[in-house]
Image 1 (tube, helix red, strand yellow):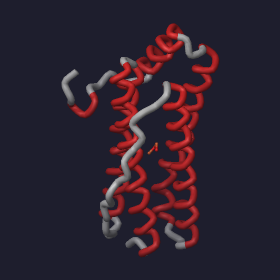
Image 2 (cartoon, protein in one colour; image 1 turned 45 degrees about the vertical axis):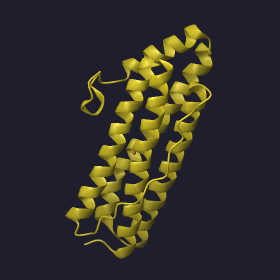
Image 3 (tube, protein in one colour; image 1 turned 45 degrees about the horizontal axis):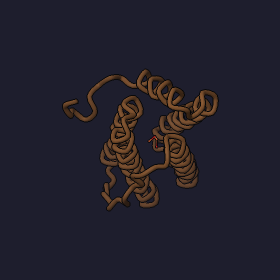
Image 4 (tube, rainbow, N blue to C red; image 1 turned 30 degrees about the vertical axis):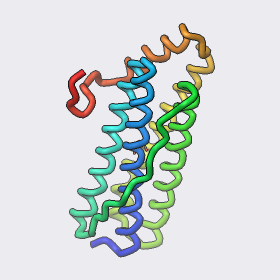
Length: 172
Ligand code: OFO
């Protein structure tokens, strides 16, 4: 059984994961429109992953006898100056998510909810990976430079990071 406090913070995390999915969906659309095929694929897939993170939390809350609340989402930013600005925004978003996960873990200690504590360790590890990935993309951009050739190389690098699966079942 979840305490009211844990249930509330988990519901807030469900909202954050849904907003992450929306944020990356908006980024993917921008990249697609600009012709960055690799970046678009990478971001569509990332958006799908965030939805999975949300669903994983929803199933956990339901399994533990809690009540899931689905909130209204804020409109994500859908326009960027360039790829660098987009990936800086992505990193900033992931850092915010990591802070929220850390706060959530702190609440599990307060509430002595070690089942939720264990469950959240997956998110702690995931955030380390996601922040590292965003930083490595920005590092590569700084190294290769934002010339047309540089951006083409980055776009190919991003494509290599994708699974190649069609995003959310849409026809390509
Ligand atoms: Fe849900 O991992 Fe990124 O935000």
